[in-house]
Length: 244
Image (cartoon, rainbow, N blue to C red; front, side, top):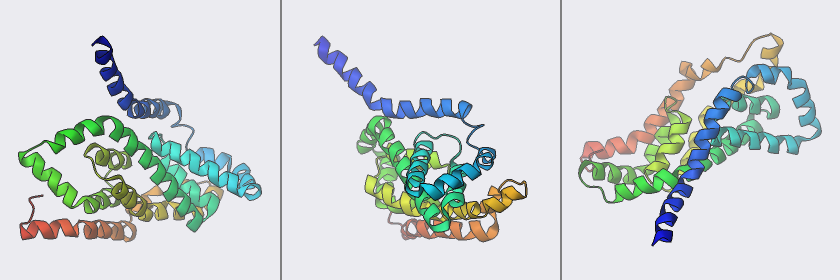
């Protein structure tokens, strides 16, 4: 009886270890890396990075993706710098592809870490819930892909939240993976395009202007895609089929 009592809490603790590890590393990284993962660091090392890329392209690409995955998976500072660096080192198309692959892999790591711990508990509670909570659960499942796309496309939603929340409410991983990989493409394309011209910006002694993402001609189409993703939810609500 004693062994069973000790085993249950141990298993519960182990389920939470992945997410707990992410939180601890994120806190440590925030205080130790925020002054290093910057555009100043990139500018100071750009010649060495470009030289290594030219002589070892595949190794540089693999290393870049690995670092970016770690930044996203552990919610470390420097995600925007990494996205811009992808364009600086690899150009628009390869840089966008590498950025999307890395960010999707990192997001998936957070998803699985959260689902293994808190996600299991909350998903079980949602399954047995009634009333308003049940309506929200059913509405989410019926419109899962639309909701996930909206989370990805609306810039005001923090990337970490868009990774964590779906795992906590029990969405299907295949839908999470699909909407992440496709939903982050517009933003990744913008940041990568900024990186393509980064060399000229550094030559002028300036830093890249990341506020470009909020320019009307950029944010407008992205919000338009978000509205399009939300359209099925709105139509169902107007028809009275679901109270969402």
